[in-house]
Image 1 (tube, rainbow, N blue to C red):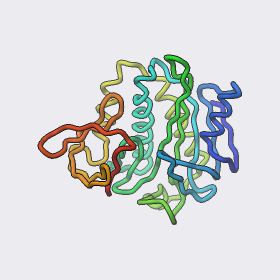
Image 2: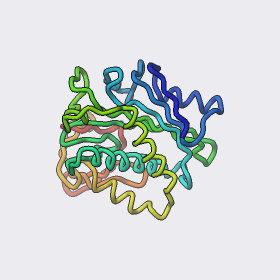
Image 3: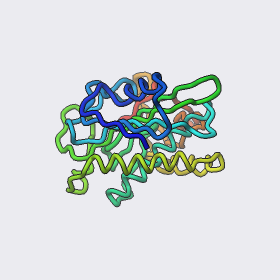
Image 4: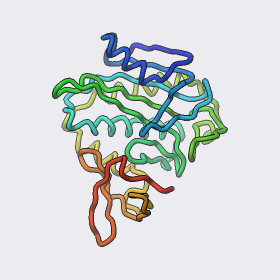
Amino acid sequence: MNYLFLPITTSTNEIARQLIQQQRATHGYVIRTDFQEKGRGRQGNSWESIAGENLLISLIVKPKFIHPSEQFIINQLVSTTLYDFVQQKIGSNDIFIKWPNDIYVGNKKIAGILIEHILMGEEIIFSIIGIGMNINQTTFNEAQNPISLRQITQQTYNVEIIAQQLSEQLFKTFDNWNKDQAAILKKSYTQSLYNYNKKQRFLVNDKEITATILGVTDEGLLRLLVSNDIEMHFELNSIKYLI
């Protein structure tokens, strides 16, 4: 495992992309920082983090046996691994994956994931897995519904050790992956979804709807049972949870 620590940087995902462009990247590369000047989440959202108190890392992986059309498998691998990691730390079953890849404890967000792929033809050359996880921070200004490990367990953590532990667990997940596990992985991901098989409020085209979460398609679209028992599928940018 190659490890790069930068006290401050623009964003770890951006550094990962630069390493790939410079042909310096290898499977198993980890970039960690104490503070991101341009840290972001999905859909361009920012990630609030006090310097040095939280986990801010990007991992570079070379996925095995995963075609670009199957790239949601990577999302499921990362989400379920992070789900398991948080569960190990807090010893609770009140943990969920909020589609597509936020990690919640109860109704509060503890971690977010931003995955980017470098493609060449019909192959994923590298995937960049950016993870932000609240570790020791206890006060938040802008973030919605945040919670940290410290708030849950009343313990203070060594962020460096957390980074190493999680990185090792994630690389092990990818190194051990094979296609025969796809159905089991999807089932595990689905059953861990926030409000799975329950009614949930959403905002679609500025209109509030209530629908039952059925799971996801192989492409990663959210499957919902709406009124009149009609199943509909939604892309990330077309729907918003109302919590």
